Image 1 (tube, one colour):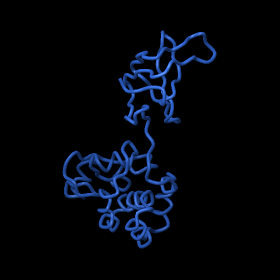
Image 2 (image 1 turned 30 degrees about the horizontal axis):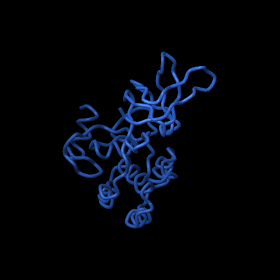
Image 3 (image 1 turned 180 degrees about the vertical axis):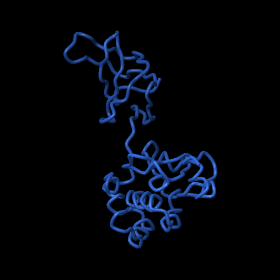
Length: 192
């Protein structure tokens, strides 16, 4: 029986966090080296996107953790603890976190990613209007920019196609202007 089948059987073919029945996939609870039913859970796309910080946390969606945290399965408990920790500024989450018991091994596992130390906010690359940017987007410069270390001047209205996001800085993207790859501050562009 495959891992997905094992988790489907264990969960009744529902998300093990919110009980959704659609768009389910296996999530290996980090850190893992060999995925199995002891370190993986079945989650819906909504939960997965928020767990992996590709979407903002929706506190109302996670109120289901008050039930899921009592799961008999360690990986579900670990993810519930991590998400409650990220939502600790919500009264209900802080209360739930206070009464959630994890044995020493599972608590150590839950803390390994350091996820519990950050709040629920996720920063994304956004243009000057606050529109979210994605890899491969096309943007337009809203200001003429002189490129440092070059005689190149990127003019107002220049279209930059197929941008790359600078992963460790949400205020910067990379793009080609006149054949040269440059770093552009997101405050000087809008999505095209």
